[in-house]
Each structure stands twice: as structure tokens, then as C-alpha cells.
Image (cartoon, rainbow, N blue to C red):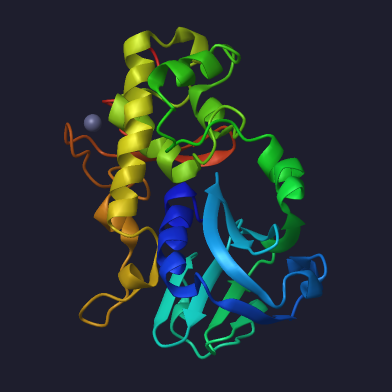
Length: 287
Ligand SMILES: [Zn+2]
């Protein structure tokens, strides 16, 4: 599932390609993937690209926005003078488009085309005014953005104190506590901090909370530095398909491999209903 760093990678990549271009036509191939009237967004210039948690906002002139939520399997692929893609990595990064998974196509005045592909159709694009963006159910409930400069470890502590009986992994995944942390970054930051995901928030000391905060920031930054789950990492220089997790993940999808800190075997457990990756030696429940 595309998470905050992947969406931030998309924001940065797409910005260079579509800013100042005029949206001339929007075609929807799947009605439930596009909410609102396409006419409201057509014939408007792209003024900026913003991100709120895991939502991407394409800001058009006249206070109109295209809010893109990728959810489980969404991806954006731009085809123009160059090809660029980000989000859930699939062969649609490379295939001729539109494909069977294309839900929405946005055409620009320079003949560039942006494809929203989504195998499982949980993602969507919505046309919203500036005010409506703030009222959107996905945006309204968001806590401080995990990458925001003003988000310090004491802010995380303050949010955690509201949920002392939650398991720490559940608290990290709660988008009202901090916006943008999904399964990958919850596992990676708890490994970084040496904290078991089932520890209760109320049992954590300041040092542990500070380490979890640092883990969130550092693993996300590392992921952005390597380009998130983008086309760039999907196809390696030798033409083979890559996995961007290899570039930064320490425990996520590493079950059966050795812990980079202590050499014990990384295991996959079930925690708060999610597949969860830990080093049983570095992350003890009784600790
Ligand atoms: Zn270990």
C-alpha cells in the first residue's frame, strides 16, 4: 500500500511534469474511481501539488482541487515527453496505457497524459473546492503530518497520552495520532526503537517515545531519499525488476533473515490485525 513517503515521492516527481499545464480533458473508465463532475476541473491550469497525510492534492486555478487517494493498489503514471510513475508498483508502470486497470485519464495541453491505475478500485480522485478539501472525511481527522517540521517527539508523546491502553502499533497506525504512518513505517520505527508492537502506550518511557519518533522520521526520510515505490526503482539499471523495500527496510518483509542489529532471526507475527515484522531479541514484550 502506498504510504506517506511514496505519496511524497509522487508529489515531488509529478510537480516537475504538470505544473503550469492546463487540464484539457478528464476521462473516467470506472465511475466509482472519480467523485464529482469532471467539467469542474477541466480547462484549469495546475498551480501546485500538495500532500496531506497519504492524500495527494493537485491544486488547480480558481480554488479547485483534485484530491487523489491511492489506498491499497493505486498508482499514477505520466506519459509525455518522458515516462514517470509512482505508487503501487505493477507492470502498468511499463505497459501501454490506458490498461485494464486504468480508472481515470487526465490529458494536459502539452499532450501529456496522467493515468490513475488501480487494480482493486479502493482508490479515488475527487474534485473539491479549497473549503471542501478541509472538510473531506479523510483530511479532517488527520493528526499532524509525520514529516511536518513542527512535529516533534513531545507532540507524539502528547498524542500517545490520549491512548494509554492502546498497543503502540495500533496508536502509530491511527491517523488521528500522527498522519501518514502505515504498516511498513510502523514496523520499521518500532524496530529502530527496539520496542515490541504489542507494548501498551502507557508503559513507554520518554526515551522510548523519542526513539519511536526518530524511527518514524528517519525511515520515512530514507525511503524518500531512495525514491519511494517509484518507476525508477521498479526497473533497475539492468532492466530487471527491483523492490524498493530492499533499499531501506530492516525488518519489513524480511522474515527468516538475520536481524541487522543482533543476528537473531526476524519473525512475522500478527499484531492489531496486521502482518508485523519484528526481531524477537531486540523487541521484547516483557521489556
Ligand atoms: Zn535483533
